[in-house]
Image (cartoon, rainbow, N blue to C red; front, side, top):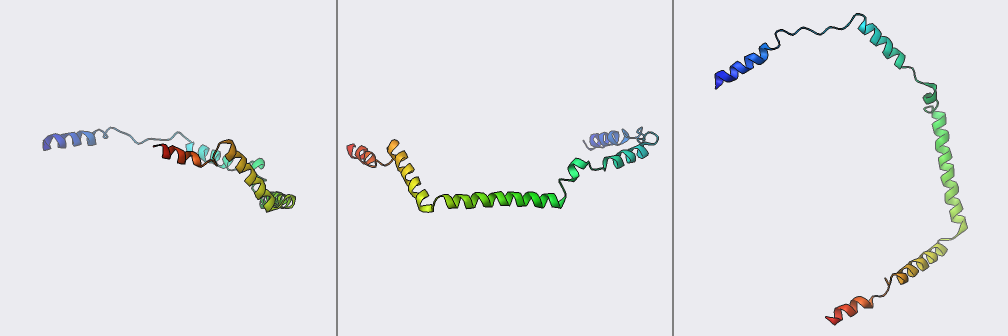
Length: 112
């Protein structure tokens, strides 16, 4: 069995004997270098977005909008008013779906 393995390995190693080194066409590297250098140019549409002035201005606009929304919602109504409205809404939903009726579970268990 060792002889079969050695023979197979020799066949595999000898299969590369007829191979030649791959070659590139004439002036391939010159053309490749020229294409790569042309690809480096950044388009003007993308370059203005990446400037720090525009990024800072956009950040300030977002922060300003957030501040306006927060302060305007605080002035319209107080926390107690919102809490009472939320409680009324929850109670009406519980009444609609009979969620506040705890005696039904007790009655079912008592019948058994």
